[in-house]
Structure formats: C-alpha cells, structure tokens
Image (cartoon, rainbow, N blue to C red; front, top):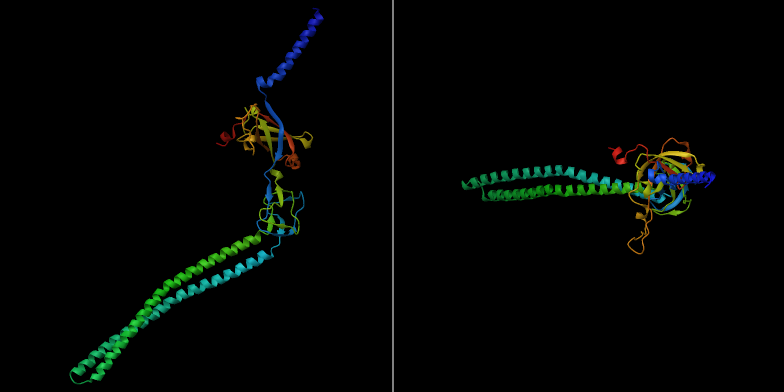
Length: 352
C-alpha cells in the first residue's frame, strides 16, 4: 500500500473514531445538560363563574384586558336579591321587637310575683285577725257576754279569709311558674332573631354575589359573558390568567432524570421570542409519569409488550425581574435545558 493511501486510511479512521466518541460521550461520560422541546408555558389560571343565577346587567372588562384582584368584572341584575335582602332586614327587625317584648315581659314578672306575695301576706294577716276575733267571740259567748250570732259571723269571716289566702297562694305559685314559660318564650324569641339574622346575612351574601370580581391579578381570557345573557351558578363566563406567575412544564424522558434535583439552573428558550433565553430553576418533579393520570391507561400485561421510554413532567419557575416574561402566554412552546451538574440539593433537604 502506498504511503498516501495509508495516510488517507489513517485520517478516515481517526475521524470515524472521533465521531463515534462524540456520539457515545454523553452516554459514557454523562451529559452536563439535559434538554427537551416537549415543554410549554403554564399558569394556574382561574375560571370565573357566578354564584347566583340572573341576567347580566353590565360587563366591565374587554377581551385580553389586564385586571387586578377585586376589580369588578360584571354585574348581575340585583333587583330581586335587593328586595329579598330588604325583606330579610324587616324580618330581623320584627324578631328583635319580639325578643324585646319577651325580655320585658319576663322582667315584669318579678313585679307580678312581688304583688302576689304581698297579697298572700295580707291574706295571712286577715286570717290571723279572723282567728283572734273568733277566739274572743267564743270566750264572750262562753261567759254569757256575747251572742252566738257574733261567734258564727266570726267563724264565717275566718273561712272567707282562709279561702282568699288559698286563692292568693295559688296565684303566687302560678306567677312563679309563669317565669319558666316566659323564659322559654324569650329563648324562642332569641332563636327567631338568630334565624332572621342568618337569613339576612345569607340574603346579603346573595346580593353581594351579583358583583363578579377578579379573584387574582391577571389577564382576561375566554370572555363568554355578554350583557343580557342569563347565567347560572357554576357556569364559566371568563378566565383570569396570572401571567406574572407563569411557569414552565417540561416533560423529560425518565432516562434524563438521573441527576436532576430541585434548585438546579434552567435555561428556557421560547419559540416566539426568537431564541432569547430566560433564566429559571427546577422547582419540582412530578410524582408520576404523564400516562399514570391518563383516562385510558395502557395495560402492559396484555398482548405483546414494547418498552417505551416514559416522560415525567418537571416544573420550572422563572426567575423574577426578566423583561421577557411579560411577553409570555400560556401554552407557548419552549425548549428547556437543565444544568444537571449544578450544585443543588433536593428540595426536601434544602427546606430542612
């Protein structure tokens, strides 16, 4: 073989070996970065739904408008709810009056009992006087100084006084027993007032629900509410997307997770941002593969089995203060690259 041919063969061999080493190096020596283009921008957006039924009276936001938490989004016609709240307020006033009446009647009963006690005391004194008078007339009649008629009249008076005393005693017992009845009436009035107050509070809540407000800061999306439309509780009328709290969900292959830990640095390239890089960090790894939560799961115990590398979602938090984050929209495709050799501890250890 000529020397030129030997040199050519050597060059080709070296090149082939170099290519082979380049291709096998990640698997042999381990790659410092793990990347995937199976990733997208996500956010924990809120679907806004009314809590009461009614006709929409006014819509105060437009499509894609930025809103603040507590900002008024729409109004439901509140005339029926306002009337119900006024009726509940009137019922509360009636219940308050009934409670005051029951309380005053119960307090008045102590005076009635005192009056009955005074009557009993007077009747006892009258009985005692009639007994003394009877004894005198009996003594006079016995010595011949008095008449039998006077003694009989004294006996009649003592019987009458005794009857009045018995009646007054019975009245006193009834008035004392009336305290329990009046106490029960007062308790019932208190219960009626609490029930009326609860109904008023519920009516006030129902009235307040006619004002539909933004639950969080964000941007309005999927606005389906229109003036004059009839809405029911739980029906979706719009969504509020908190873009300021957007994050990235990247689906890495299970073979890429060997050295991934929470806290590692991540570079994110969004397709719509012309390759500009956003900085972030790995926040957590999902507890299961995506297929685990699928409605229809594959059954590997049936038929022929073919091993397929699974993907596990990884949550990536973007670092604050980056101007490009304002241009992010939920659902945008991104490419995520994790520096698996970065000095980072697992999230559970870092929190200890």
